[in-house]
Length: 400
Image (cartoon, rainbow, N blue to C red; front, side, top):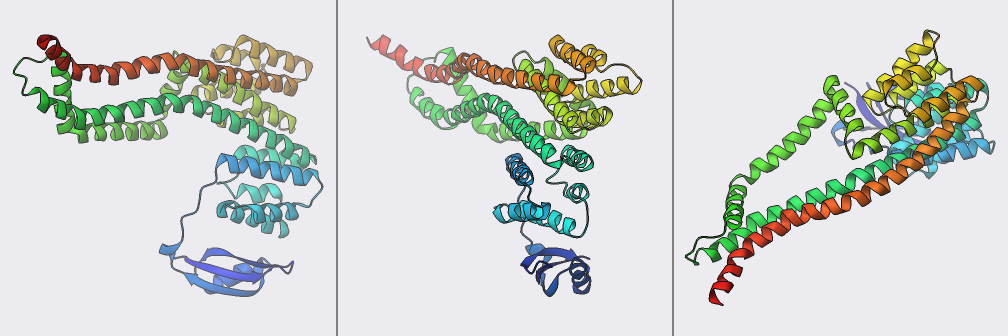
């Protein structure tokens, strides 16, 4: 069984380094560190159960890392120095450790692409493939700059979609929490008050009291159903390919959100494709990576059909148009780009246009949802409050 070790040593550069590693025993750990060029090594075993949980690496942190690396490489700094500076400046131990491992691999003679490909938690296939293209063509600084722009645009697009989805979900959750509090704590107090009236209560009040009694008795069932439903949906979406496909298909056709999802899918497709074409990646390889990063199984299927079309000697435009996902303007601009040899430029213009469209769609969606949310809150909470006060109003009229 592998053991955890904390180590301190002197690197080839004379700097003092420290870190953690797994090895079968101290002898193996010492041999690994010596092979990497370390000397004056000090090892200390660490119980595996006490190893702190590694912090995850967020999209925002990858965006910052990419921009920093692109800037330093463009300035002419050696790769080893770039990764050393990024590691020193990072507050996230996961990023610091990953960048140091890449740096050490480069110092040992490994290519940047190979070193990055081992850090799967930080660098996805698209990132590694673009770096590989930059290394092979000798334009790594240009590719990293384009990759930084791509990451920034993709992160911004994802944030816009998330903000559009978060608003209505947050309102519904707050409304349900308030309704639950009213049902469990407020309505029972009114029920005791109404028990001394000696007259039949209005129908809305009787319905509210019945709902309150049911909620008090079965609140655990409501919570379990909600939690179980969310868990079942996530599990099925992740593990059931057919269910995943149907959900993605519905998302593209949904009455309100469908337009936003479609526009964001087109923007992501165009931005990813444009970045890879600019890096000099072959078209078939571009489409492989674009399909993997599409974020929607229906869009992925359409892109893979386009790849098959090109492999058979046909154009890229035909299968994209036949999918029904990509608007006529998009397919025509791609067709012009193919015909004139300016595919990268056309794709970049499509991405810019649809990213702006997503901005407008989010603003329009927010403005459209506000009256519906007000009606929902008024009907749910306002209706419940009115139902509780109706007997009091009736009693006041009788006394009057």
